[in-house]
Every structure is written in structure tokens, then in C-alpha cells.
Image (cartoon, rainbow, N blue to C red; front, side):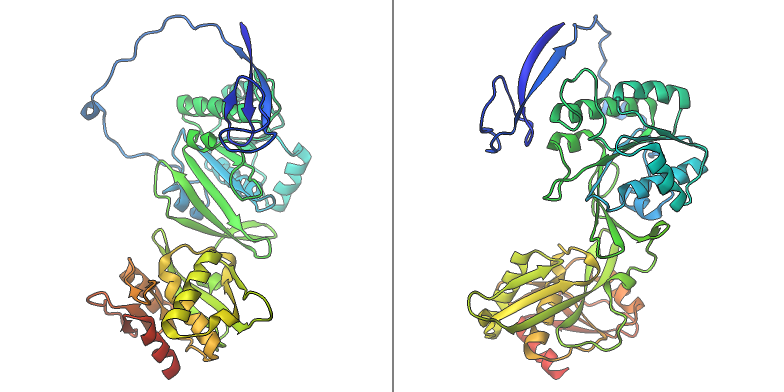
Length: 448
């Protein structure tokens, strides 16, 4: 057995034969860590794998299993695929362990044993959480073992349907000399878990830490090794949580799941409008309603803007729920095309419900909220704005217009302002107003 020393960058996994002060790949300082690796002896000769033509492989639908949480199944593409490895990442305390403990209870109730490997908490701590969540299935087996080399033996003995690793940064492989959570340990442990999953058909859930920037800790190769990467998002100031697929080999990455954290665990949100819309019947100036499509789900969202004279110095542009550069761009378009003197004003924007919007179709609603606050004119509460704002002040068409209009009509709104894009779908009790430029919406808001 040959022993070799390598130096690996903890930030980007770049390898080098000697220690360096600065990583030549990512440019970070003092990130190299020495790792001692023992190379295994060459394996004996094995039979060659024959190539198989594509049409000769039988086609069949993937048989999925329910996790017991409909919103999680939606994000996974319809349920769990046997033999898949699912990585769930999120901020500390967001509810990752709570979610997977509830998933374990549901799977165990379907007749499949579950192994819950708790690498960061004691068995007593897990038991206290399970009592609060009313999780008490005898088919859930807690395992306080961090050595990944022994996992195959427990799987052979218990024969579980699902294995939960909490967390992947806490387990280690004895053949790697570095500490748990290091680059080499993450790659080796994930590779072994993936190998077990593909050979046995067992579904694995891995909980992953995130960095202060909000990305999953460890090398990017970790996300490439697993089948599904789910981001568990939310603000601790709100009780609502969002599941979002970052990667999914078995389904779409556009779907989101909505959950609410309660004293007895996470619950599915059956009425998304309760999150993003105010219960008040009368709006104040600076409020506007818009829509965002997440996967196949249209969401009605309230946008709040506040425009006020700025003090000495540069005007402020602060946004919660959208990218701050996007707010600056919309503000610049309004100043240029409508003649508003917003360079002397502070502009604050907030998207209710704690969601982060990337859909460009909400630009129109944001612009309407800023105009309403600047002119101090109240937008009627029964009006919804849909459209992408161009730099020329043009309101550009958006996809899934009919899907958005159906949701708007279902929620009882009476008017919708949309970009002119051919024939407008007809909806009962919903009046459609088509506009082409931002100047037309200015006149519409002034007329009320």
C-alpha cells in the first residue's frame, strides 16, 4: 500500500503536491490543508462490460414513492425515486431535521423501516424533538454512528427503505486522515453513499450545511454526485418555508413547495395567497399586486414601495425580496421615461411573505408600487399588474398569461393590467387592460 501526501484547497478542492499560501484556482489565502491518502492495491481482473444499444434497453416509467409531504413530493417531481440520493441544504435552524423526521414517520407508516443517522445530535435530543412532532414509529431506527464504513452493515441488518444522514458534514471515512467535513471526507463519504444507493435501490436523504453566503458547504462536485439538490429557504422572522429544487435528475427544477412551521412541526400551505397577500381590504399608496409563476404554480404577491425625500448624500435603494440591482434599474427607467426626480429620493421596496422573486413579470407591479408611493395615489385593491419592464419603458409580454389570469379570477380580482400581446384570454368577471408603455400606466393610476 502506497502512502501519498496531497494538499487540497478547502474552498474549491484544488489539489497540489505542495503547500501554497494562495490557491491559484480561487485566489483564496491559507486554504490549503494536507491530506494523507493510502492508495489501494490494484484490483484483480474483472469481466468487461459490454456496450448496449439504446433501443434495446426496455423503457418504463420511474416508480416513485411518496415522502408523505405533498409539497416535498412536488419539488422532487412527483415523489422519491428508489436508489436516489437527495441533498437538502438550508440555514441553521430552518427546519431540515424537523422535515426529515416527519418524512421518516410517514415512510415508516407505509411499512418501510428508516435509518436516521444522527451525527450532530445525541439520541436523547432526537427523541425530544420526536415527542414534540408526535413522531413515535417503532420502524424508525436512530443510529449514533459517524463512521460511514459501518453503514453497509446496519443496512444489511435492518433493510431500510430510506436512510437519512444528518448531516453529511458530520460523517467520516476511516481511510481518509482528514477531519469530518473536509473536502476529501465529503467526496469519499458521498461516493460511498451513492454506491450503496445505486446497488440497493434505497433512497438516501443527506442534510448539508450552508456557508454564510447561503450556498451548500463543500466542493461543487458534491452537488454533482447526488441526484437531487433541494434548497430549504425561509426567514426566521416568518413561519413560512420554501422548498426549491436546485438540481433534479428526475424532474423539473422550477417547482417550489410551501410549508409553515408550527409548534408541532411543518405543515403544508394549502392557500398560498394567505402568505403573500394582505388581509386588509383597503390599500395605502405604494401597494400593488402582481403575479409570479414558480414551476406550474402561479402566485399572487403583494409588493410594497416607499418613496421619500433623501437626506444629504447618495439616495438609498433598499430591497427585500428582489435583487437590489433590479430595483435600481426599475427606478432608473421610471426617472428617465416618466421624468420623476427619483435621484433625490430614497426608494425602499419589500415583497411580502419572505419570498425572493426572480420572475421578470413582476417588474410591472414593482414599477406601479413605486409610482403609487411617489405620487401618493392609492391603487385600487382589485387591480393586478403583469409585465416585464424594458429599458425603453415598454411593457413586454410574459409567458403563462392564461395560467396567471385563471388564478387572478379565482382569487376574486376584477381588473388586470397586462402587456399587449395579441388576443387576450377571456375570463369571467375579470376586465383586462392592455398597455404598451409605462406612460399608459401612469395615466391609469392617476385616473384610479
